[in-house]
Each structure stands twice: as structure tokens, then as C-alpha cells.
Amino acid sequence: MKRTIAILALMVFGGIGLHAQKLTVKEFLRLSPSDTSAYMVKGVVSKIRSSTSGSFYLQDETGTLLVYGLQSPGLDKSFKELDIVKGDTLTVRGRFTIYDGTTREMKNGILLSKADGPEHNLSFMDRLEKKPVFKGKEGDEAEKAFVAWVQAHLVQPADGSKGTVKVRFVVGRKGGVQEIQVLGSPSPALSDAAVKTLQKAPKWKPARADGAPVRVTFVIPVVFE
Image 1 (cartoon, rainbow, N blue to C red):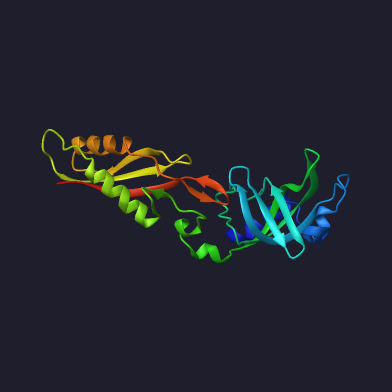
Image 2 (tube, helix red, strand yellow):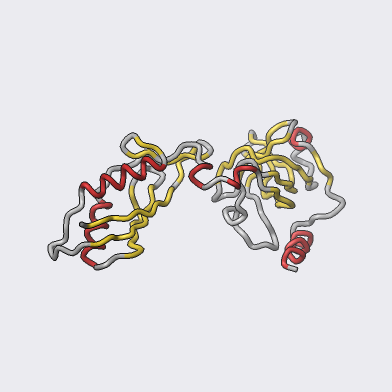
């Protein structure tokens, strides 16, 4: 029932209909800026340009098209919530435009259909073009190296308390350790000691996806013995 409602919403708000002509990427890019008609284009996502603005590159056998500001009317979901990744097959509908006199693109395209590509079977870490690096170690080894650094630099609380503190943190786009949050702890003293240690941690080399640095979240144990 929900799927039916979503499809009907797209048809009403997205203007889907049998009248929309389907074009190849090459044919779409040859359109005149004065053409105000909306056309359908189907292709594979070759690169995510910005998950914030909902822009990406759609590729078929004839070329590559920049789609800027993808919308999904009636579903009330952001681009991130649509879970679109490289390798997905999309059909989008929109009008041709030339941005700043040079960039030929589809602006504010409407998502008509989506088929998940093979990368949807991968974890977030495995989807990355470049995994985060700490002390020369990458990915899972980087996390182990970071935990070892934290353990080596812990300062035992004055009350001598012991236990394990579960901490979540983010390695930002510039490599800094930020947004530190205690998820579980035996005592406030241990929580405070763990957070202070992470706040002093060296920077990482940030992860990269589609040529740009991205944030990565980690959850680690901090053990006081």
C-alpha cells in the first residue's frame, strides 16, 4: 500500500506521464536551452558530486550527465535518505539547462526509479575510495593503531577506578578527532579521563569518496586497568 501511494505521489507531484520522452545522455546534452520540455534519462551513477545538494553524474553508453539537485516529490526524503551510491541505476526526469554559460546539466531532476547497484552489498568503509589513515595504518588497522595510541596515553583517574568506557567519535574532513561522545561508562571520572585523552589525539588522514574527504564515525573501547 505504501509503495502504491509513493508511486502515485511521484506521478502527481513529479509530473510523470506517458508524454515524457526518453532520451540518451548524448541526446539530452544536445538540447537547446530554450527547450522547456522535461525529458527522461536512464543511466548508472558514476560519481556522487555532493550529497548535500543532491548532485551526481549519470552515465549511459553515450556519455555522462550532471544532475544537480535531485528531488523525490511525494516521498519527502533528502538525497542522503534515498541511499543513492555509485553503481545504482536511476531514471530521472528534468529540463536541460546551462549553468554559468558553460556547464550543461539537468537541474532539479525528479527521481522516477532506482535499482541498487553492487556497491549496496558493501559496508560504508568498503565503499570508500580511500579509507582513513592513522599513524600510517589504513582502515581496520588504523582503528587498531588509534586504540593503541589512546591506551598508551591514558591518565588514570585520581580515585583509581577501573573499567571500560565505550566512546564514539568522528574523524572529520580535515582529519581531526571531533564529536566525542561517551556511550557507556562505569563512572564519570573514567568518562572524563577517556574524553580528555581523545581530545589530545593527533590528526588522521581523512577518508575520501568520489575525490573528496568524508567524515567517518568510529566506536572504540577505552580500557582502564
